[in-house]
Image (cartoon, rainbow, N blue to C red):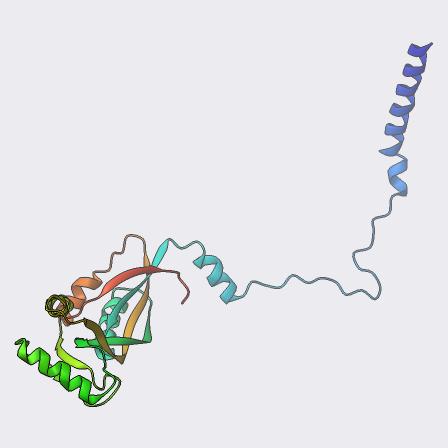
Length: 215
């Protein structure tokens, strides 16, 4: 009984399958491409900027910032070298603080009279090169000299502390503008930026730092 039922169901499914692909298919009506009152979607063409972005995403390159240069003129000369090498560049100006020297001193005293007392005591102990600061943020401090080299300033302050005085040192700075060169370098180009810098300005102290390609 069950076998006859299964056989009957199979025959019905086969007959329906044949009907749907012959007679039933004639009654099918495709849906309209446009509905009345509803705007159709339009595929916009790819713009040149989009094409550049798409191409740029496939580029095999790295970007760097190179500097700092104290002179904009020197930075432009290096930029010209990089451009002639076939690479895109951008000069970025930054404000920074330049170290003038390192100041060694004894902290400001409450009054001129107390400063003179310490000054006289240091003179009797044969400490040379000291003086009283007359004005400014270090007024009534005892100056022990200014040094261009940090190690010399540190050694001198340690020597004065050894003699019993609480010597300190600090960097004295001034605002300054410097210039960095950003550039895009395809893999394998290896632009000799360090060599060009030595040729143009042997005294320059610069570094090449990887950065995001955002220009």
